[in-house]
Image 1: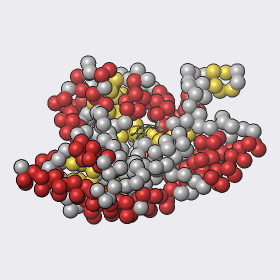
Image 2 (image 1 turned 30 degrees about the vertical axis):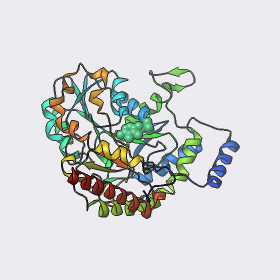
Image 3 (image 1 turned 90 degrees about the horizontal axis):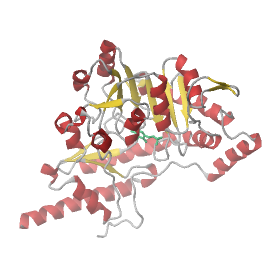
Image 4 (image 1 turned 30 degrees about the horizontal axis):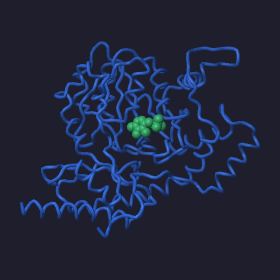
Length: 384
Ligand SMILES: *Cc1c(COP(=O)(O)O)cnc(C)c1O
């Protein structure tokens, strides 16, 4: 194994500004003696992100999960919400904490986002919204979803944790739907250590979200609704202002790595690349492949395990399906036959190491390892 990595290679690494730049920012915060509650860093980040993302309404939060949880709350949803089983637990847990019931819809084999052709059959008089996820930077079928929502007067919310800065048809991705959640977690393309935001259309929501993330306080003596504490603090916002300066360069680096992976993996049977957005519109959040065991010869789980011997730590992502959580077992929509594509895909996906600093030569090395594993396995199976 001469292509073993000396250091463990993980799927991502946080985008970090120079310590000098962060200390300067922290100096500003110390001088201001203002650490949270809509301080000057917070205000500056909100303005810069509105410009960068080209959205009119944007509200910052302490993390993406609370942004989604309170966004759903602000829309006054009731009953059932149609959603996807192929997502991170936060998507459905935001429903749980609002007392809303997920109705799981199967996914599109091409994009792994909710299968819009299967949504309508799940709508009942209890349905109040569709909560869809733009998976790995692949956008949902936004036009079809909006048409269904319009026909049935449903709200549309997107978990856009993977699509920072992505565009569809030249428009910012958050142009679609009533609301889009963004995550600024350390593992995301753009990070504020922990953090998140909601981009939305209705101006009236801005005031409500401000109340919801700050205990419902209109002023120190007036509590207008039952809220939470979900405010982004000044250090998070300062981090965001510095990281934002690095995002375009990081995206450009990831673009080259994506092309390198694609060129090399195309030579292997049974491997499909899932991140398909075009270069000017992609978020490059993850680089994910799908292993078709019948053509590759070995399973996703096998490859995932074998790569560890080379110090390469890929991740089964997303895994497990949210519809398999034990607290949903009683729901009719979690029946396996309703979710056959999701059940299949969840056994095939593998997120590969993907961050600018990784560099082209490491990507080539990872591809060569996969090739070597594939060939040695084939030789072995020819003998037996
Ligand atoms: C990261 C992520 C979240 C959670 O965001 P946090 O900012 O970590 O709370 C939600 N949904 C998806 C799809 C994610 O990838």
